[in-house]
Image (cartoon, rainbow, N blue to C red; front, side, top):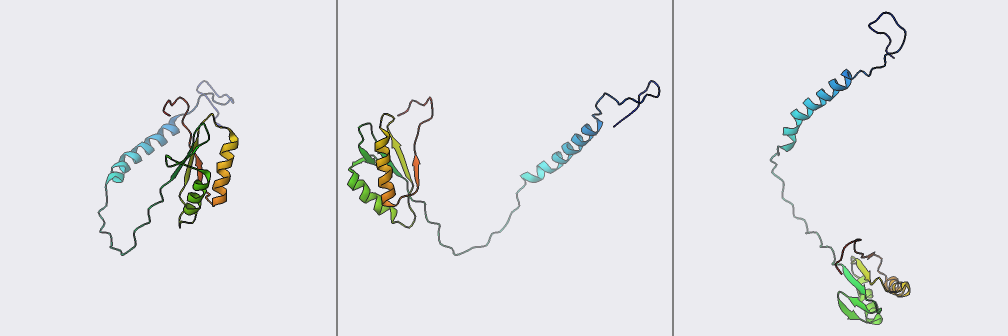
Length: 141
């Protein structure tokens, strides 16, 4: 704690904040950033080695599963029955990498129908399921 003052010998602490060390540190940091900024933009030319590696497998395309207000099921915008959807789900579940399922349902639809479709997905063995929503204020269907 700093003591003292200019008007005599007082034992009270100084009330002013000493900003000199703060300014010194900020100026040093500013100089360091000014010097190092151009070095970060320079690229180093590197001759990379060649490798005989297999190409990465592309990610499986997502399945768009939709339910309209009447409860009808659509597989990638194609109408399907529950039995046909279950067969397609089982075929997708046995693939090496399961495709994700994007489930979108009409907001007027009852929750019962959504749980029935989720039960079909579970029965088929599909585990990567995501719910599709629209942001608040978005007027696109």
